[in-house]
Amino acid sequence: MDIMNRSEQNDLGKRVSNVLKDGLKSIPNMMSAFRILLIPVIIVLYLRNNRVAAVSLIIVSAITDLFDGFVARKFNMVTDLGKALDPIADKLTLGAIMICLAVWKIEFLIIVVFMVLKETLGFIMHWVIFRNGGGMYGAMWYGKLSTWILYVTSGAVMIFELPGSVIKVMVTLSVISIIYAMSMYTFRCARILGSRKDSKPDSTRED
Image (tube, rainbow, N blue to C red; front, side):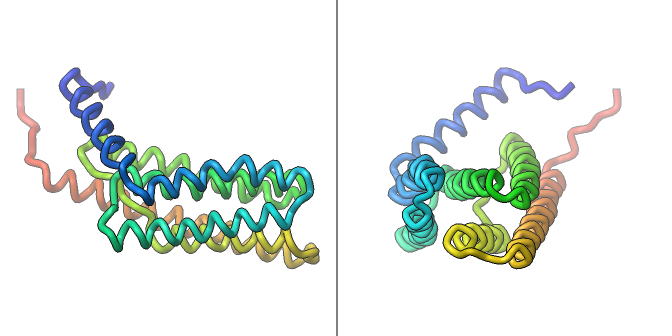
C-alpha cells in the first residue's frame, strides 16, 4: 500500500499552506469567492420562481468569471489557489443550477450525472499530480467552452418557453461538451504524469 511517510506529509502540508497564503491575497480569487456566495441566492430566486432575477445573477457570475481571469493575467495575479478556485466556482454554480433544472425537467439529470463523473475523475487526477510534486493547472479552453455551453443552456431554459425537442438538443450538446472536456483533461493529466515519471531518476534497485 502506498502510504506517505512523515516527511512527505509535512512537505505536502507546507505546499498546501503556501498555496492558500498566496491565493488569499489575490483580488481575482476574491471575485471567484464572490461567485460562490452568489450560488445560494440564485437557488432561492429560482425556487421562488423569480427566474429573471436568477438569470441576471447567473449572467453576473459569468461576467465575473471572464473578468477575474483577465485581471489575474493582466496584473500578474495568477496563483495556484486561483487555478483551483476559479473552476470550483464554475462547477458549484453550474451544478446547483443543473440540479434545480433537473427537479423541473428530468432531462437535466443526465447532465448532473456526467458533471459528477467528470469532476470526480478530475479531482482524483489533479490530486495525484499535486501529491507527486506537480503544481495546480488552470482550466483549458475546452473546459471553458463546456462551461459556457452549460451557462447558455441553463439561461435559455430558464428564460424562454422552449419546445421539448429544442431542450433535448441543448441537453445533448451539453453532455457532448462535458464528455469532450473530460476526455481532453484525462489525456492532459496522463501526459503530465507521464512526463513527470520520465523526468525522475530511476530509483529501482535489485535486492
